[in-house]
Image (cartoon, rainbow, N blue to C red; front, side):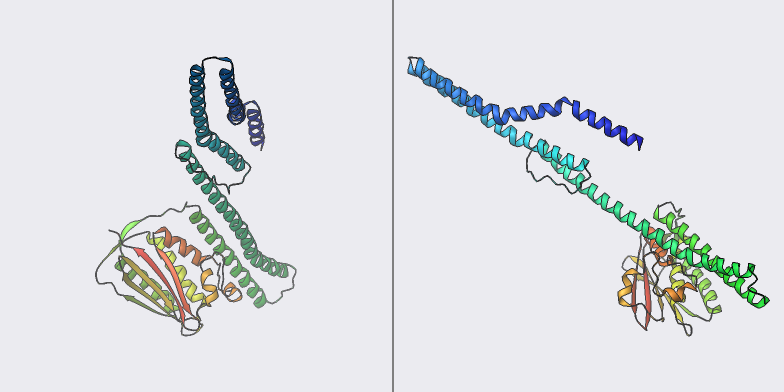
Length: 369
């Protein structure tokens, strides 16, 4: 703050003592007011020449000469006014607006010289400053929303933990069975808090572009075969049917980070499990070729996502069914993290869904040339 005040004081003193700032206005005033006066004075001199010099030829010669000189001079000054002084004045006014924090400034003045290039560059600079200010404002709004969401998501389990611990300490709970039940709830909530912190830490590193990626050229079919075997084992243990289909006709290389791509796919499959039906849930994963890219479909036969909620599924902390997913350890960051990880690989992720029929997430990844 002190440096800012010193800078403002210096800036004010500089403007007060800057000579060229005053000179510009003096010269501009001279061109606008004094030169017409000088022109009228010259006309008066021509009149005197006619009146006092007896030789009309000499008088006419001087009159024509002075008139031509003044006309040329006035034309030159008019061009100077139009090409230099007026653009400079508009530039100064626009710069003053920028200095006051008003970035919605544009100089509408066409001139074909160096000032025209300068005006064009200034307008581009003002546009970029305005865009930067909008991004900054959006970022600040997102930051406030993020803090509010974190506070809300942490407060519920912490309050629950506090309540159950106080009940145990106050002797309200006497039976071992009830004590054990309370301890399981406390443990469940601590796991949720720990997962939320891990997801927040990962998301913040992605957001600040400080997450380390270990890219390598990977044969996608071999990678997916190993990964799908792992998911098949995990899901079938939970009585969830899992099917993997490979539709590629020959091997292709992708530039991937094994761990990060596995995490993205795990988050999508985890989302299908959280929102899926309790019985007869089935998940299909399909590997296919789409043009010059590799596609991965991840489908389920769950309840689907309402059409009005589809645009928000990749938003941070967004939950389709808050009450239901809270018990299943949902932090509301899984799909947002998956989207960021896929885009970090140069890919894209989309979602389509039909209520009561299921949901399909599609990942598109570029093939390594």
